[in-house]
Length: 124
Image (tube, rainbow, N blue to C red; front, top):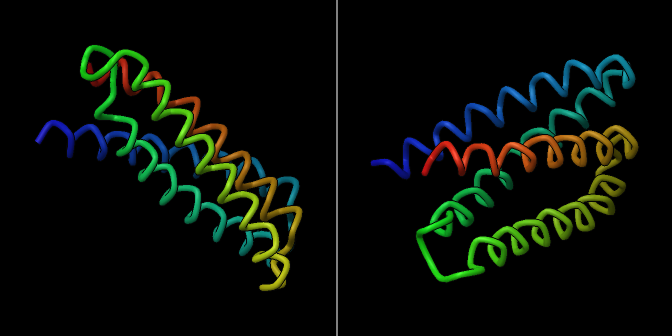
């Protein structure tokens, strides 16, 4: 029950951060194609972040082997990087606005990744 509540709270915080970032990025990316690319990036970032947080949560401090938290956080960072690398050619093939797709995905990943330690601390 506590795990479900923690992931739900992270989902809410992540969604809020992604929505605010999308509003700010819409000032720079103004075309409909760019907005659509940002929405696809937002959905992808949200899904990846929830999976990454679910992987990270069992290893919070005091609940696992020493160093396990950093190992899981590193795996999450590598996962995000691989998604970004794979998303670039897919966005190109799908004819999305490449600059809007990649800038928004990196922004969403960065903001939500920075929220992870705060929410892990809150969840202790």
